[in-house]
Length: 185
Image (cartoon, rainbow, N blue to C red; front, side, top):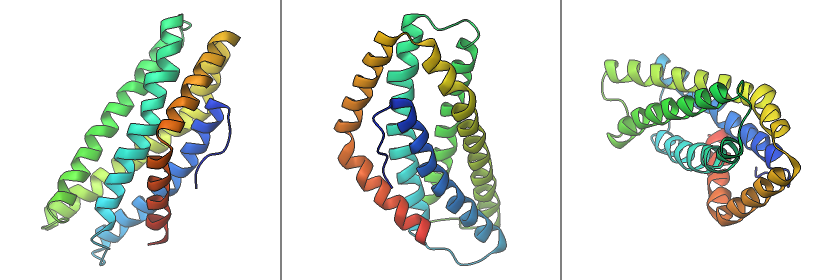
């Protein structure tokens, strides 16, 4: 389930496909909770681990710390600056929602009807946010970001992303294996 491209923007897009597969399964999990169906008690902690480790720490971390930061330091086009700020706010909102999921997971799952309703709401909010976010990045933000970078900056970002990926390869592989298990549950 890992990514293969050496192009850092394509790797980010490839990572989106991995995240989307987990979002689809998370949405199905939320639907099962809403219907009152039995769910795997290990799934919610697994979703939290994947979302925190892969979607946020690895994927969003690479975007924020390397790609967008490099462009902002270089001097991003004025029209792109508000979009990059919006992307950062969406990452922060996603972190808050993952925190809500983690709180339920740490309690061993929802314990009341109110807990179940809140869990379903958080899952719906998170999956909707991330799907919109991914679509915006894939179709507008990533192409505009890459186009705004001169060749030397692109090469520097590509090298930094490759180093980041190499340093996180083992963790990413473990989290992709977790994603595979979550998708099959």
